Structure formats: C-alpha cells, structure tokens
Length: 181
Image 1 (cartoon, helix red, strand yellow):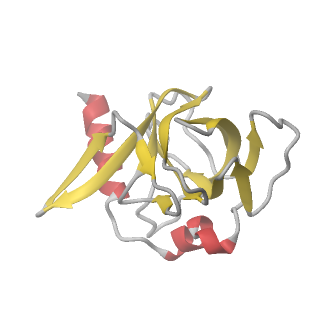
Image 2 (tube, rainbow, N blue to C red):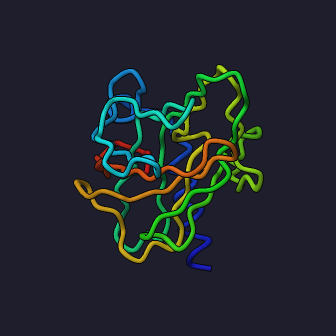
C-alpha cells in the first residue's frame, strides 16, 4: 500500500506543468546536460551534445533527484531516428533499479493516467521522440538508494533494430517550486 501511495505521489509530481529547470536540463537544443553515452560497440565513446547509435541520435538525457525514501524515479531523453526505417525502444535497465519500465502519462479529463508500455516506444523513421515529464518517460522502480543531485545513473537502452546502448545520465536537482521528479 505504501508503494502505491508513493507511486501516486510520483505520478502527481510528473503531471505538473514543465518549468524552467526542465527546459534547461532536458531541452534537446541546449546540449546534453552532462550525459555520458557509450554505444555497446564502442565503450570508449565520449560524451557530447548528441550521440549516435546507428541511425539513432540520443540527447538531452537526465534523471530527477528523488525524495528520501521514494522508491521510484523518472528518466528523460530525446531519441531522433535519422534513418528511413522505423525502430523501437523495447527495454531499459540499470544496476541501480531492479526494473526500469517504459511508461506513458496522459490526462483523461481531470484524471492523470500512467501506464507501462509493454511494447516499448516506437521511434518512426525521420521522427524525434521525446521522453519528458508528463509524457513518455522511463520509470526506475524499487530504487534502494534514492538518486541525489550531482550523482549519475548508468542506463542500458535496447532498441529492436539498433541494438543496445549504454549511457550514464546525470541526476538533476529537485528545487522548491519544481514539480517534476
């Protein structure tokens, strides 16, 4: 029951309107916010504003700092498919979370709905998909030690056609008035 209450609190914080700190941390045009990425075929790759995995470009990644005792956290990034063939983000994993789920949040009337996307997220050819607060996102569940500002979170993304990709996302702070987590 406590987990469900925490999950409801997390959903409520994700549902608030975007604020300036999100724009600074997650805007694809503003760089990568300190994200370090390594394609599984090139573990020596260095960080940059945008990193390429085949025909996919990944940028703007970060996770939010969590409140003490909070077992769930959100992760965000931008995926751009520069190719002529569709792809799909099928899974995500991290050694800091027993499960990283691909989620969607939406408003249905006055009710906020969050659901796990069992089939992953389509990344259509020539399109950009943004994982952001109040929309598509990664949910880190059953996190033993809440993420703290200044830390980083290792993450592996697996795509249907492009394969797996290891990256490290910076933890962005939670500020008063900031309703995202």
